[in-house]
Image (cartoon, rainbow, N blue to C red):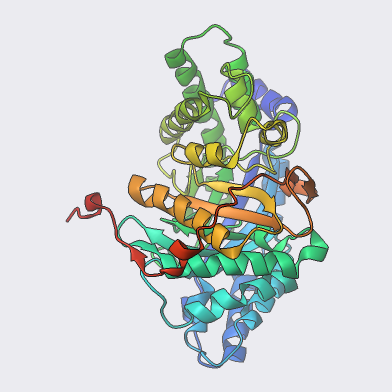
Length: 452
């Protein structure tokens, strides 16, 4: 039962602390759209997406009005397109990307994810063609997002794929250099990718998911920051308890919205992803939560420990609020989308190496990090491999979303605007990993992957 205090508290969170539903994402299987004729396949893809998601935005807007809860994005995720491209090997996969964009425009969604390939153990039919088409596909579309999974705890790391993705990221930045290098901002390289992630740019609809379902991604860094700052003298375990209780409240709101959307759209309710996803808005920052715990600035010594506390408490509070918790769930640390992270990076307190350490204990990984435009493809590949190794060994999802800022150097700012914010060009290690990357092959899975 909700009482007056709970209702007023939620209203205050929405008005003053940036609480929102970050996304309602509809996952749609395209397996029944596979056809050796790419024109027929694209027609099936367009018809299925626009039929299943015809009312998605309308329902999202209706729920916003009904409950007074902001729903920032309405999104779609689809089956990895490489699976469809495998059936028409002589065709250009970019045609699928253009079809996805057309469907996104028709449905009026903010993003559509799934221009993706899963190559963690090797390349199968359709994978290479799709991966090599990513720069052009992202250049020719506005709302289509791409992801590639190059490793997993069970399979190890496909280093040939890591080497290729360094080239793809760099090419994507160059081909969109006239648009703030936006291409790689819509591209994620994963290790241990999950099949029910509602957040972009890494969302795709896994083959183990139902034909169609609704996922909800909640947010609320501002709410957690406000709660933590009310207890300036609390002990660490008391702070953990405060965060758990706050995460519980945030997740209950996501559960409410997801269940309502499921009924209205007549599709199954998938998961609530309770990740703390920051925005450039004042106060909506994961870095500010860590600073509220007592760090002078995010990135200083103690940051990784504070982030581990935050991530664990968020998950524990969330799983008590919903039996549908999934996706990534935890704390995101995208640099360009988090004002506190931006400030710390500009001050030099937060460096790439510290961010890498932080990814061992948070959700996902090196996210929305701007690097110098003259970075080599091999260095990009090595950063990807480092991050994938953290995910593989720790049996967690890690990801890389790096933006080479073509024409910019360390210390300059790359301005995206909107939800993507702006990012300082961060220093990189200039010693070359080229010979290591050129070896190719596969980094074997760790011993603890053998569980059967």
